[in-house]
Image 1 (cartoon, rainbow, N blue to C red):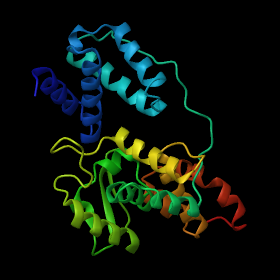
Image 2 (tube, rainbow, N blue to C red; image 1 turned 60 degrees about the vertical axis):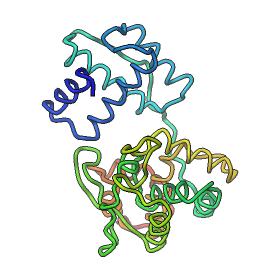
Image 3 (cartoon, rainbow, N blue to C red; image 1 turned 90 degrees about the vertical axis):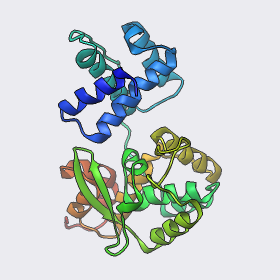
Length: 270
């Protein structure tokens, strides 16, 4: 670990950032340094903007991902490199598009189009538990509670722990996956020893399966989370229960993916 990385981690922890935020910010800075092939101390503001432009135009990362990386870089310059006036703003806006959940038949086709068991298990877990991709890739084998048929999300968004569903079908798939891959530290391990699968890699696995399945709509792997919420709503699960499973602090965050099916179900609210 370089002295700069160690110092940044210390400052993040002093600011009481969650472990997930620490990892995301440190990864953003590492990607910046790798992009230019030199230390962030030698990278100018304009070069940082060039890096973010590259992420948006060539890597086509989502607004939220780009914004998170920008926040990590700004934190480095302000709190680690001692440049309190460092300012950076990316002129991007969140999409106004409604979520596009996949139909149950499309979900089945997506799983069938997987290239191997790891890809299929990843996608089944993403859908079966309604995970954010950052939560999905940081799952550990110990988070699977087979006795209670629950999956624990440790320090999810907002530094809140929660549990989500573990269906019998997903449990069967996870057991087969365990027998084949024997994951150690992380449930879905990355290419490098000791590291979990990157969120971008998980997104690409989803995109590949969607292409093979001939599915035309959906806005990335997050579509599986929207599908989870929508299908629970269609099955009659009360909205507050879905809210807790998804880790939303308010019903407004949950009702977005569900509003279409909610309005066409029953006349009385949950």
